[in-house]
Image (cartoon, rainbow, N blue to C red; front, side, top):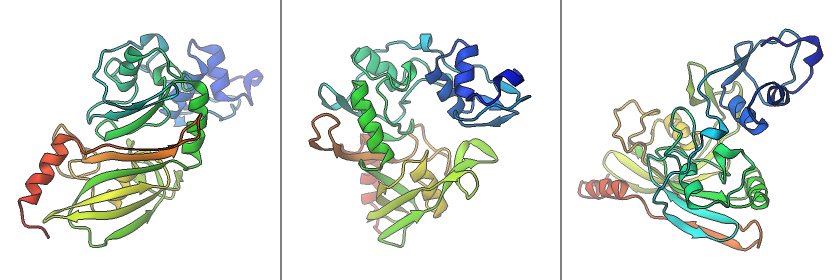
Length: 299
């Protein structure tokens, strides 16, 4: 569609919600996921249209009516009237999209309860933040919009403390390191992120060595920022990619995916303001591999 004089200076998310069957939340997600292009280039939802802009929408994005409730064994660590803390297995996608519409965490949450926030649209009900498909461990969901708004602000202001455990390839020589390197889209592969100074955002990861093995290093990672694939990208950047990472390691990977686990989460409850702390142990596949490494000579 080509923009005429009468529609110039209108935000693209507002314009598309008026001229298509998609809700504004869906439109925003489509723009952020680069299903909407202006003059063949991605833009932000706040982009103001110009005369003769050519908007194209890729096919295949999920519609709200496509969301189905799916029975799923959820490992719920904690639940009250406002929040749910789940231990997500490796291999489970957080929300529908890209051809996977029925077996995501959102589908499972919708089957489990009708009380979920809808601030981010139906395809992301309850979801305040994401972790990658093959990253295991803690993820927080909200039952009410009020709780969602407060928790989203905590994530934005980085007051939530999150720790991950990762197994890196090679032996990391330093006991503690801080990686301060901006992350943006890889210009050669839009599905990947990379350290770059172009169209990027600040990203800071703190790593602490937990144990060294002959050819691997077990580390705990603390995030100051929450960029897409942040730990995986920073690990590759320092020359020690996360073991078994199918995207950022040059080695072949098993179906389990990267050895990266969302280990702990600490925050103030959105309604009661009570201090909350949760942690969950490594998945069996991860632990079993470490036991095999323990049988070898430690570096």
